[in-house]
Image (cartoon, rainbow, N blue to C red; front, side, top):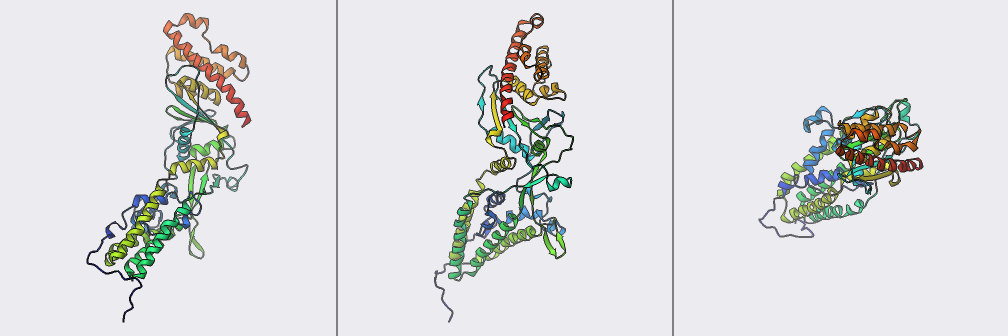
Length: 457
């Protein structure tokens, strides 16, 4: 006689067909959850649950496997892992170097993150002077990132350093979907619903293996090796009315403007003596497993009992809720915090001011940068006006920049209207010039105060 199951559920003719959503439901949330897996400790070990969206995840990350075989299964451009995990690809703001005069119309992902970080910082409002349109200026005193000498520097390669993952409570939260997946799988086994039992088990194994393999990469910061004769890299990032002044060595500033995050996977040893370094064979295999999971669920889940289908759907519901929780994490904010930590930047290394006018912000930025190569071009990047009043104001500011170091006592007198200018300009022009020079005096006083802060940090 056949053995009765420990728990007997009376069959009915109704069948809950959940196979249609088995692989497609929750795909965006599953991808978003995977994209933050490198930011937290032990996240790669906590993927053992039956999650929806296997098809989307498999197709998204399968294109990393860049051999002919995998390109046939997962067609698409073979992008670098950092771009697929949204660690690269953002376009940064314009950068103007004050010492060399070079201009980068577009910077990279790290400059974008730095600008976003500065936009979110709390600053100090300068209450003196006029108020027309608020401009933000953030000072950043960069710190040595890669040390005095590295192994890559000896080989004339770009410097690289590892970024350790953060700690978080996500490991504990993952226990819930893992427990629900294993409990529902066990209940299906107890009722002898082997179709749903194996499908839940397949979902657990495929997602767990995918998390282990996709999360096995090492997150690193890659800098830029400047030439030995490179001048100090002082410069500014310009994004509309938001300006970030970067002060420090060329190597450290070039890391922000032209550096990037990279994900490095260990080579896969297909043959004992021939490691395949760029094929990402394990990623292709786990992506194929995720696609097979979808096909198996489409065929076998309708063959299960109503109770088994309900258990399968229950495991999906809890896993989808957990993926939704992970996808709610601000990926860019995490990257900003990781970048600040990798660059050794703390609150004491950053100052932010809100100025009432563009002219005050422009003079303050120029005085802090002290450009040596065509300083007038730096001012023109802020204010390109070419009228007589603006030209006179610009020449006075340039004279202050030239004499500030050698004869600072005369700078305030230079920022006054001369007798010749009193006779030359009309009344409206004199009023405008007086306002512009007042803005410059406010910026000059603040710049002198900030020079002490730069020497102390």
